[in-house]
Length: 111
Image 1 (cartoon, rainbow, N blue to C red):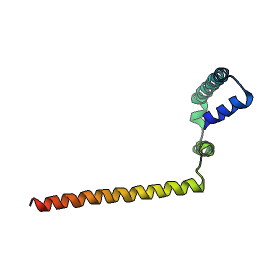
Image 2 (image 1 turned 90 degrees about the vertical axis):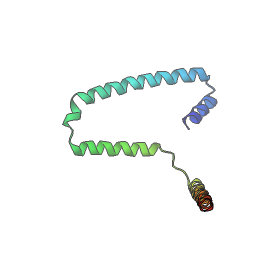
Image 3 (image 1 turned 135 degrees about the vertical axis):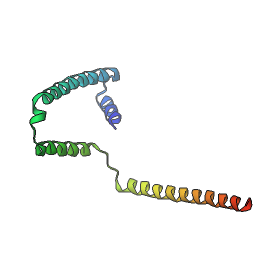
Image 4 (image 1 turned 135 degrees about the horizontal axis):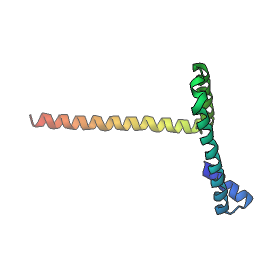
């Protein structure tokens, strides 16, 4: 999905893709440096002093932000996936039942 968004930006602003990737790498390096600094600061003093309630609130905030990033399927796609799952389960059940019947017949013949 991110690649589609990048492609749209490249097409919309008529940016050379190599230039776009160079700028993107610079942004990634800068953000990585900021993250490392934040992690170092948190590890030194504040991590031990935070109460359980504060840590729980931070955790809930992280969960909420991550669920916003998830691409949730619409109703039509969900129905398709559900039908495909039920059909697959029925197919596997019938397959293993047939195998069991075949082995039972073979066993009864050679006894």
